[in-house]
Length: 620
Image 1 (spheres, rainbow, N blue to C red):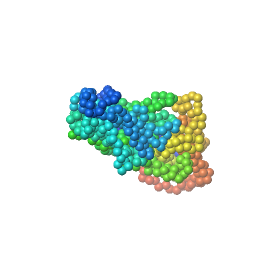
Image 2 (image 1 turned 135 degrees about the vertical axis):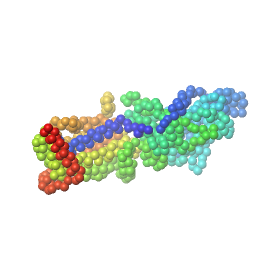
Image 3 (image 1 turned 180 degrees about the horizontal axis):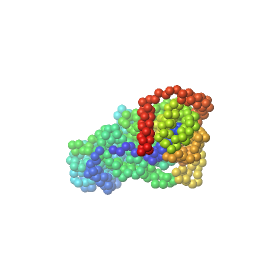
Image 4 (image 1 turned 120 degrees about the vertical axis):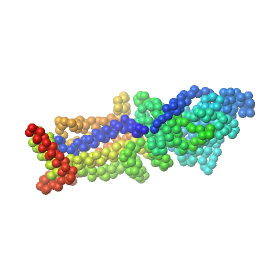
C-alpha cells in the first residue's frame, strides 16, 4: 500500500521551510494487498444500476387491499409490501440532542438533513453536512426472482422509541410484518457519534445469496469557509484498513481506489467530517473522489464529491452489521477520545512531525488557551516559549558563525596557498578546524534540529479546530486569511485580497536573513553552492504569496517567531558573544596539543595516503 499522500501545498510549504533552513546552514559553513479484480468489477457494475420510482401512488390503499399489494409485488416482488404501508407516502423522522439534529427520510431510510447546532459557516449560515440531496445511502439488492432493487427508492417504516435517554429510530423495509431489512439509529445525549446497524430478518428466501449486496455511500461536501481553495486543500477521503493502517485519496480526482478489510471511511471537509465506522471490517471497497472546484475565482457551493461502494457479506442468507455514524467537527480531542484511531483523520504530519504535534503542541496549546484571554495571545505565548526553548540551539549556531568568521582570513590563506591541490587544501583546512576547536558541522546540526519543530507547527495551525472563527486584532478568523484590503481583480497564486500577517512575516524573515548574512555575502557564488543571495529575496516573496490565503494563525506564528529570533540574535551578538575573546580562545586552542578522536585520525591518515599515492602517480 502506498504511504499516505501529501498534497502539493504541504510540499511547497515544506520546501519553503527547507529553503530558509538551507540559508541558515549555508551561513554556518565555510565558504570554501492483492485485490480481487473480479469482485471489484462486480462492485463497480452495481453502482450504475438505473433508479426506478418505487413510491406508492397517491391515496395508496392499506396493506389489506390485496389488489394494491398484487400490483406492488408485480413491480417490486416481495418488497412490494413496503409500498402499501402509510410510510410510502413519504415523510421524515427527526432525532436530535444538544449538538446534532438529524432528519431521516422514509424514502431510503437515510439521513436527509444533518445540522450541527453549535456552528455557523463563514457567512453565518448553520453548518449542514447533509442537505438538499447532497448525500445518499443506497443498497443494491439482488432478489431470488431476478430483480435488482435500490433501497434509495424504497420506503422504510419508522419507529421511534427512547431507552435510558437514548433515542432509538428503527427504519424497516418490509416484506411482511416480521420480515424486513432494518436500519437502526441510536443517538445518545451530547454525542456526535451514533450507533448504526444494518440487519435483516426472514430474507433468506428473498435475497439472492449468490450476490453480495453493495452499500453505496455518496456525499458532496458543502463549502463552509471563506476561502474555498484553502478549505478544499484539507478536504479528503480517509480510510483505515487492516486494523490500524490508514490512507487517503489526496487532492486530485481519483476514479478508482480499492482496498479491503476496511474499518472506517471518513469524508473530511477540513473542519467537519462525515464518518462511517464498522465493527465487522468491510471487504474489497471501491472509493472515488472528484474535485468540484474547477475555478477558484468563482463562488462555488461544493468542494469535493466522494463515493464508496461497500460490499456487505451475507451470513446464512442474512445481513448483520454493527456500525457507527459520526457527523461532527474535525476536532483532534473529540476524535481521539473515541480511542478508535480517528485522530489520524486530522492531518498533523507524518512520522516525527505528527508525534511532536500529538504529544507536545496540542496539549500545550490547549493548556495555554484554557486560561489566556484569546487564542491569538495563546499563539504568541506558545511561540515565545518555543523560541526560548530553542535559544540554546540559536546560540550554538551563532557561535559557530562567529568562529568561522574569525578563522576566515586563515582559511583564505589556505585556499590561496593550495589552490591547485584540492586534497591538500582540504587536509590543511581540517587541521585548522581541529586545532582551533571549531567545526562547520557545529552550526549545521543546530539548524537541522529545528526542522521537525518548524514543519510540525506548519501542520498544527491549519488543523487546529480551536482557531476556527476566533478573532485577534484585525483578523476575524485565525483559521482563515486576514483581510486589510479587497482587490478589484484576482492575482494568480495570490488572490483578490491583501493579508497583513503574511506581509509582516515576510518582512521579518527578510530582516533575519540580512542579519545572518551581514557583510559576508559574496556577490559571486562558489560552484555547486546554491545562490543564497537569490534565496534571501525569494523566500520572503514566496511566503508573501503562499501564506496570503493560509490561516492567519500560522502567519501570526511565523511573524512572532522571526521577531523573537531577531531579538535573541541581537542579544547574543551584542551582549553574549565577544569576537575578540573568541579569537583569543582559538589562538590558545591552536597552541595546545590536540588529541584527535579515532574517526578524525583515521580520516587524516586516509587523506595522507591518498596524497602520497597522488605524488607517486605524478612521479611516474
